[in-house]
Length: 469
Image (cartoon, rainbow, N blue to C red; front, side, top):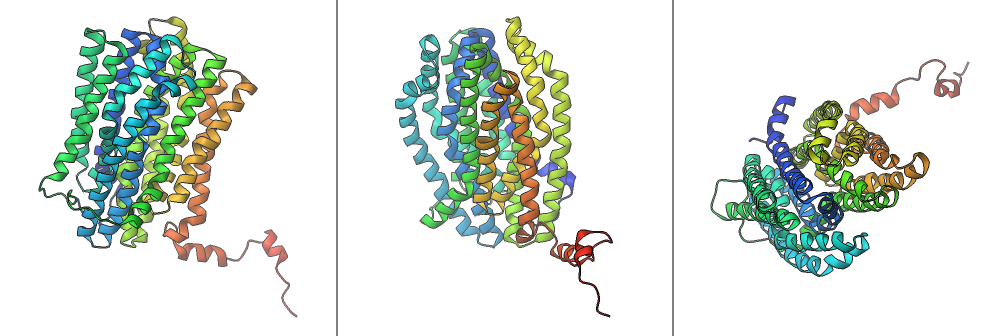
């Protein structure tokens, strides 16, 4: 696709649809894990996965950082017309991601038991956490590559590649969940091995595809040896890494608060809410992932008019999507809770209530997530990281710690509503403040606003000096 031309709302949706579908399907096969574990292995097994998953996500965040930061670097370089250097940057980032993933997998396997104990696990719950987590370390490098390649597929002008690989990996995971957990009864170990197999497909199939001679805009080959460019990619992608780290830390705090105020059922219900909300938030994530290379390209080409058009169209699409998600969540809360926890009436009722409260956050969530993606695409990783950290580590942590004390245990589920609403307001303020610097606001319009005479009665008019006689 020609990334330099103007895109209507319909064309923008068509371009980002493969990324959206890819992220949604990735979430769906994660949901299938939870569905099989909950119904065949029980709520203790579901609670174990919910407890240890944030630590596994933290280990894999480097893949998010390399994918988003590397995409900006590569797209910006291509926008300046240097395709060969873009290929060398791409190769450098992929090789660094693979090496770092191998080292982190070894560290994670050794740290799994003490971390699980720190998170509050004991007895059978502890053993399940350690078993599940250590098995997943087998595919951690592939998991990191998978998320990096999901972004690089759009950067290479081949968004469907990521979709096809994700579909293959997801179908493999679901089939093996049915076999290992449903038929053979392997419990959390079966769910873990199914996930490992799917992640190996998701990470190494794109690696082989980009390594062969192909007509793609990107190709693996001789890497650049440019520490400064690698550092730029890391700093710029740190916002996406920070977002995942923050979400994982927040999940840990949620679990600790739920164990304190509600007990193990609260952790199990939170697991269901997280699995289901991943499907909805994946729409936002996929759209931001697909749209970011377009913004980076136009930024490299210094096309301010198209940047403004992309931003306005994106915000409109995300607003409509958020309203639709809220409506769907309210309508589907009961049947979804029944599917996951129908075997336990109290757990089902708690899950339904949590879903109905949590889903209100979908209204502002698209805007708050787009803000971080936007500033990453524009090369301002610091602002992007501040938005990501403030949205979760700041606002959501404060809310989840304070609201239960003010309104009781149900305040835990409402914490994300407060955080997302305030983050969306912060995004609007930053676009208004920094917009002229990046061409997101028309300078002529701003100049006209600043020079426009104040209306009669306005404080500025009343303070103006009287004309000389």
